[in-house]
Image 1 (tube, rainbow, N blue to C red):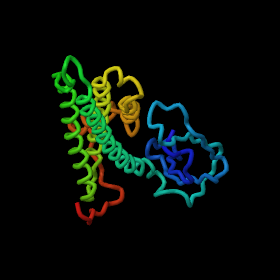
Image 2 (image 1 turned 180 degrees about the vertical axis):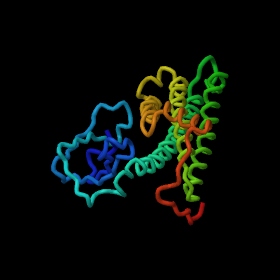
Image 3 (image 1 turned 45 degrees about the vertical axis):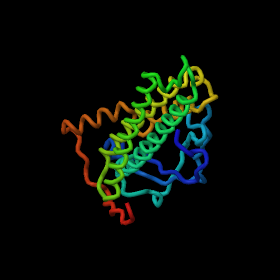
Image 4 (image 1 turned 120 degrees about the vertical axis):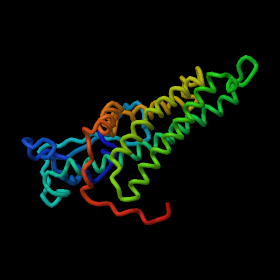
Length: 242
């Protein structure tokens, strides 16, 4: 499954051209919808992110001309990892926004809902959930900014985007769960938006690398088992206002 796979006209596809070389045998290609043997269909029944199209791609004896190769043969994995860095960055940033929506909804409802003669915002454990949301949002936003700063400086930010993606997506799920708890029974219904926030947040801890793989990656950096190679194509620093 891939975002917009049912509507796009061109696809960046990574295919193994030499199995004996492992990941070094992967090459990137541009596949056009008009190519014989290529087809796609819409994916239905997703838990969340229902406003975004998702497509299932099928290749049946689909031939791609050499002119549609991206980079050199065997560079596909490197190209894919570069693209994933930026994908992880956007997922992290979006997750900060989702957690912020959970916080905003919870603060609003905590003022509106009365229980035992006072706003539920006066209850200590409700305050605890709201405080946790805020602390994680602020920490996550700083991680996203750091990853973006390195990108704008023309530096590789694989480690930073991975950390931001891991932390921010996990916190978005935790914030959505707490937001539902703050809303009580209403949080379990679609009368309020927090149930949608949980459904949408859950996908973020799966795509662009699961939370589990990011946990291992960060440990490998710290233990010295993983080191990033120089960028395949040097990135020029951003020259606009920051």
